[in-house]
Length: 406
Image (tube, rainbow, N blue to C red):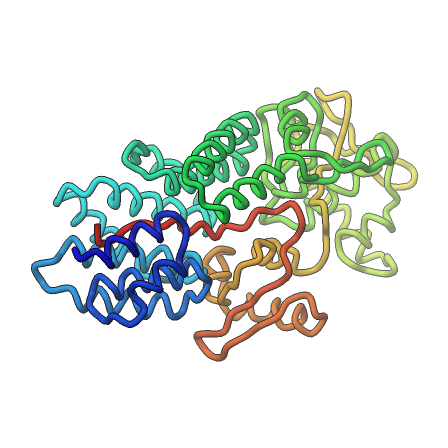
């Protein structure tokens, strides 16, 4: 490599994209194109970054398989940062295999990390955890090690393992200080704030308060009968019943849990479960049927007893009942939850992450845009959706500076 390429690579490794561009901005050879692509990605121009990295991969000759594979890995990182989750994962896997075959352990490990990151973005936690177990973080640079530990923390947070998450964030903070990249340090600090930010609302005995992630973990490990409105599950200790596919039964269970130890009138249950303003005989008959179904699914956890006014919940083992609800509840909340990271998402990426169709996501985005809660830019396949970040939520754009040509 010539001296300018070496200096530009070192500038990128130190988090100085402008310094790198000063050295290679006017060059069109393959190594310079790769470095320019990484620099543009660090500056936030992800569209230009992908184009430059793709050009670099084509510019490297057939004998430069390692360099081309490194460009593919860099392009994959930019794609995932821009929420292009439909980017071909097989290409990343092939690039990782090439790097491993040629002994490039550092970039191969980074490619494996990117696979985990994509799985985490689309909510495949089990697969992400299994893939992460296959990754040896030892070869990673300080910047990549920071990103790795943030992914470890992200999985631990979703698993409600707060001690493991806190330990991973401590390691990420240490690695970020060693990397000396201000943007990466700020990312870690933002992630740490998540553990001190309210994660849910606890509703019990007519009262309501915000709770931290650690309190949620402790609640679910206790002997309290919990109606979990975040996951649509009813649980006591290690036993749980999922009502995710039975919204009417969950609405009944939540209403009964919110009013425990009191009872709920039939009219209120009809309104909450069926959305009816006035309860007639057909609604009351349907309510009796649905309550019977609820009794059947909760038979090992609780009874649903009839009262003069309506019905009341009676746990079999637990002495307390609590409802765990999201900190903010509104229509289309699931879409807003993904957009809250402050990054730009395409409707296809949202559909992939939510496990639904692109048209369904579009129907949810349209009223949000009309209400001014989200904004879009671009057209056609390039259209992206954004919303202002919610305080306390960490973004997931982690773009360390791999050196694909070193």
